[in-house]
Image: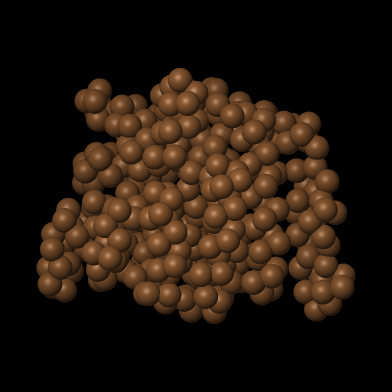
Length: 341
């Protein structure tokens, strides 16, 4: 199998964005805020949104299953307050669940959390529980910067995050560390903020001792880890300077990287530097980079091509494409086994 651990519902029907625009317009007057029931999207509309898009590309590229979460840039946790985020997260999570119910052998949901700047992360636990218990979510997206590029939240190693980690450990469910839209003009959302956050999150984990308190916690850092593989020697040296164990002992039992790197040399570097057991196949298709690369004639986000062209031994290729995801996402593995796969 090929399992894509990083998919977003970037093609949701326009009615979803319309509802969100109404919600934002009503921030000054709660009486004008739309209700969840006001959003009406049929199953046929859901089919029309994914069949010519994600499903078509999955079929063309040979991807069997996608871990499917709400559109990352739409999470926009900086908008409004906790109630705003709660309503928005509930709607977005429900749509991903409905897609997974329509195509149970192709999509499995991952949960967006109702984070809000300055609000205790523990307030997100009920939505996490709901998505796992009711929707069968196999992962969650954790935003280390709900402020939208101003970095007002404490580091991921801070104890304020522990209620979420405790529930993740209880459910044996991983999180992808994924920011949302940047409202800081210094940071382009997908070109700077996303990659900055990947690098920042990894360094926070190197500085702290989170996995001493949560030895089974698993975090996936997307977009190939940002600058991490390229500067692996720097992080090894910084860990030494901080008096930490080697990276292999300190973080690599719990931290994983995906393959959302959109050119062959970068992908090859990832495979050369990061241990194979810590790499999960992903594409984030129809996401930040949607165009065709004129140098290759193929889409930038067709990461299957980069993985297959890396000349990896068959067993390493299989680990990256399937086995590592089944290990890091045990609820996905259980689902696939129930399906006879």
